Length: 423
Image: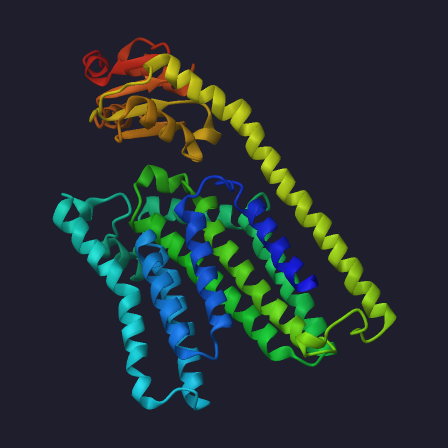
């Protein structure tokens, strides 16, 4: 029960680290670590069977490779671990040399879906290479050669500041992971004399975290619009992906090691008398109860938070959108920019999704921050056909007054008419 509750409580902690997305928003930044943890679960469940191990790895990593470009980082981690496990089976003679070709097939199958998807995008979507997160190889080479622009330095300074900010949920998760690993090394490593796996998982988890953070930093420098990069847009969502995966990975290893440390190794023989002493029995049972209450409390908190947001914030926003634009029954292809001071619902994409639903238009973006120069403001509006103003937005109103000589009330406005008034 204690082992199950440790994993159960880990899922509850995911909700805390995933607060920028929430449990009911199945965005890719949570889907990626969830899929990767499924792969790790397969590694543990099928560590002695080569065929099920290969099949599980190929299928899930194949899906993971097309979820998002950043998912390839996790795919590479999965392939490295899979290769190590496969050759360990070979060394233990549970795998014959004639089967080793399946290792190459598994690796190929894990990446082939990504290759096919990229081909599909390049064939059917114009300007795919100019997508929002397309990587600039020239800028990347410039950074590695030590030539950084002023903007790149500002992005780097902001990145370091946010990364080590005590208000960052990702940093809370990293600190928690390292505290758990330290306690595990002390208890399991020194007292119970099983230091190898817990120490290795501790070092590996920090190596993965550092590598991923370097990847995020490079993404902001070379693959994201400069104004979004300077604000480190979406940082908590990107960082939460790796923290959730590493926490789940560490807890899986920890649970396995705790199970190996139990007095009775035969699961079939474990019962109420299978304790080393009355003290350890009491500690085991009390720990299980504490984890049970903690987990239920965390999940109830998450559920109540979601319901509260749905009743209050999100419901009011959707009704406001419907009141302004109605509920259209014909598809539109106009590009619409939604202006809202509701930062939370802009960042969790609720406003974008709700507006697309009521307008029946897939070309909708939402923005909360309009701290721009006049030229940047006009350039932004030129990318859209209409502007939907949901509320009295101070910075948008100030920029409109400065650029067009007037402010705009809530409603749907034509950018062509707005730009015709530009000074």
